[in-house]
Length: 328
Image (cartoon, rainbow, N blue to C red; front, side, top):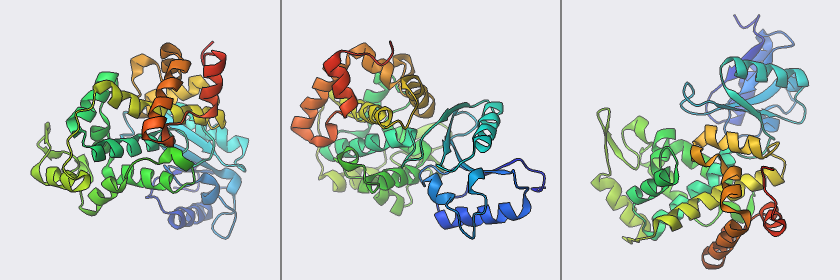
């Protein structure tokens, strides 16, 4: 039944050799025009599509990165590598649109766009946990900010193993200090214990039945070991600004590096991809509403006291200096 296919989507686990082997198998039974789309969340498409014995038609390979849970998440990142043909890109876009997804084309870089912005959040959350901010307080602060779920619940919902993989991958991807400032062993140690989130009934929260969730004694003692038993009563505004500024700065850096096309695409990507406070309109609308200059000042204050991971990217500094807005 593959012989007549125009497009095949692969969604196996994150292993480069396995993905290339599947391309080899698919190419052997499909027509020359068949597009091969990979649903990787982290591996560069250029690596998956590199010509060789396993890949004879690299021009047909494209990334189609869906978000979990796929039926309810409206965003689809489409990632061409430098050799992807216009036809393959158009086919991926057409299929995504027919599936009812909002499609955005993103540059082939580590983490693409949404996960790349998620990386610094995960790092910052680990820093706040290390400092002794209680998990429930982190979640409550971010839902009050306008997020549909807090970062702790988000980790459990997407899978602690997935969050660990994204944060570890991006921390090793040579993105400099922007992925630093925390301790992501918090997540990898949980994975070693088999605490994978809701899917394993145990993540940060322990899940019982359909609705029941609580922080159990095992997690409490694990966190005590992680942060030395510290309990920090941080203001809600500080929690919100520390987490949001890490994401906003990365989104602006993605615009600066032309990973995304424009601020509107950046807003849509984060509202639909991770539910960035929808009524704030996305990171760039949010920056326009609070004022880039005052936000840069806030970030510089964090950079002075907490470290250079908070330093605003050049684009934010430029907009702050000129008083420019991202949306006319």
